[in-house]
Structure formats: structure tokens, C-alpha cells
Image 1 (cartoon, rainbow, N blue to C red):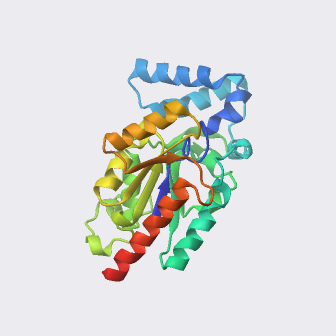
Image 2: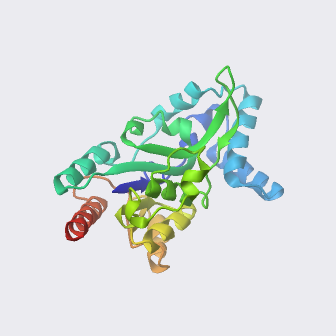
Image 3: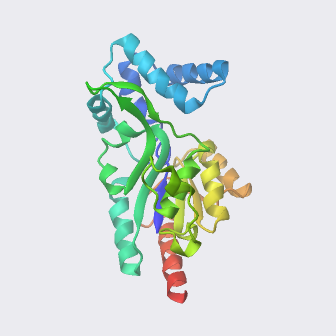
Length: 267
């Protein structure tokens, strides 16, 4: 069984660049993201590529280093939602007791180098996120991988088929019988928070898995947005982004693990 997470707004509030990288530029998050949106609109460009370009451009103008270690240093200031840091081990243990092997994955447009510096990074079987190409001096020079709201679904198929080598296009496109796929979609949970998650929400839900919209606790507008996903048929449930033992999300995922275990026992 695979549990797949978006990152920004799902496991941590806001965007990963907002903790250190953007303040180091001498900019506010609003200024940075408004500039990205303008560039995307004027150039009719992909928003993920534009934010990655803006990171390099603004850093060059401000004299801010953009080495891999600099990105990862910024990850230390990321605050997670309650219960996140021990969630992954707790869920795997619950699955083990139920006879279900669980793997956690990230599929996100966020910056991979920052995510990889967080204390939860080792908990994931794979982190699929937007990443930079680095030169011989370890300096970021170009986007190596840009993941946007539609391309995110590719990585669900990679998990489904076990095709994790991104350079191997044959493996992801090769026909594989459903029974031979390592992680059936009905054994998959996708957890996200926003419009960029809609294609993944729908794919997992329509293929028999569980899609869950989470929202920042005690935030009315966020809750209304998440509940709209339920009304629109994009997810089965909307719950607070609270990962504590006994919370709504904890009980929901436990129930789904039991369903997967029962389904396998009856197969």
C-alpha cells in the first residue's frame, strides 16, 4: 500500500521557499509569488518553471548562494502540522500489525532540495519533486525536473508500476497487467490540499483508491475550499491537516488500511 502526499500546505503550512530562501532575498512571499505569477502570465509559461527561474534570477540579483547545501539549510526552519514528524512510523507500524506493508511517497511541485533537508525526508520511499541541475561547483544552474499539477499524475503511475527510474521512459509506458503492478490504485491513498492536486485526487479516486483533501486547522476559508472538493466529487473526504493519534485523518487512514487488509484476505 502507498500513501502519497503533496508537501506545501499538506504536511507543512505555506511554501517551502518562504521559511528562509525568500526572506534571504529581501522579499516578502507575496512579492515573490506575485512576480512569478506575472512572469507566467506574460510569457504564457508553466508556473513551476517560472518559480524555479525566479529563484535563480532573484538569488543572483541579491547575491544569495544557490548551492544544494544552501537549499537544505533552509529546510531546518520548516514547521510541520501537528503530529507529522512521528506520523509515518506510526502508520507503518499500524499497517504491519494489520499485515499491510506501507510505503510513503512525496509527489509535489515544491523544491526537492529543500524537502530533502527536512527531518522527515528519510521516511519516504521516494521524493518526487521539482529539482535543479547543479554544475561542477554544486551551484544550481537550471531546472532538472519540474512537476506541475498535471505531470504529478505520472508519478502515481510510476508508484503503481514500480517504475522509479525517471530516465527509463519505456518502463513507465510499458503495458503491465493490473495483477502484476506492485501497488494497485485501490491500495493507494493520496493526500493533498489544493487545486494543483485535483488531477491526482481524481485519478486515485476514480481508480478505486482513497483521496483526501486536508486543510489548515481552524481556518474557515481553507475548510470551505476542501469541502468543495468533496461536493465536486474530487475526493471522498476533507479533514483538518492534523496528523495526531486519534485525529480524523489518523482514523480515516487506519480504516483504509483495514479495508486493504480485508480485501487482500478475501482475494
